[in-house]
Length: 246
Image (cartoon, rainbow, N blue to C red; front, side):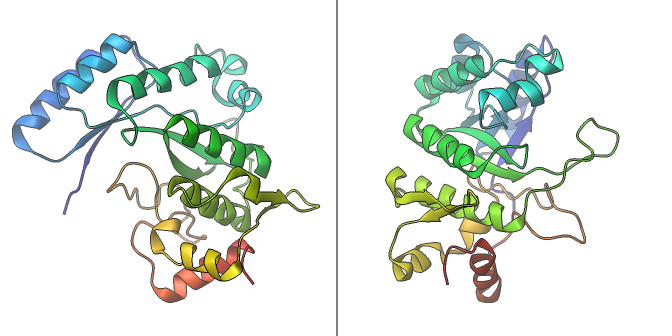
């Protein structure tokens, strides 16, 4: 049973008008919430999307630092995308749509360290932006085809931190890093285990209802984002994979 319609866009001159047309047609046949994932657009265009009934707006930053952003999708790619413009677009989206209705994406495995990923998550939370978390998955024939997926233990730690931050259960000063740069959480182990023994921690994150099955997994590989609720055995394994709880 469908829970949401998500309109994914690409970047071209008339995309906003096309989105408006599509959303208006969708509103005639469904009462499901409609999300739009789009590049930075003007505040006036954001207001128009809100007026026609778009429930959530997503503007993907993907890389968690300005340097990585330029390398992956900005200046180094001969792209018009700029880190500051993406942040501005998120702020303007918050002005129009409000908190809990604005999302960005963070891709783990682009060359960042754990502290940079954690800092980004806290930065977005402070702004009021929800973070959809994904693991880098290479595509043959692209310039990043040889870049490996992130270690599963690293991804699990970031999943847990993202979830705790989103739920207001973790403060920045509770994060420390070991000699290898791995994030650690300063919290009673029993309390931490209770907080993360919830299957949604390891499911697809972002807009409510999103599952994107196999969006960043290989059919024979590890399940980074589960598209469904986990059973107790899977939750226990995922927690163990993080290395955060004995």
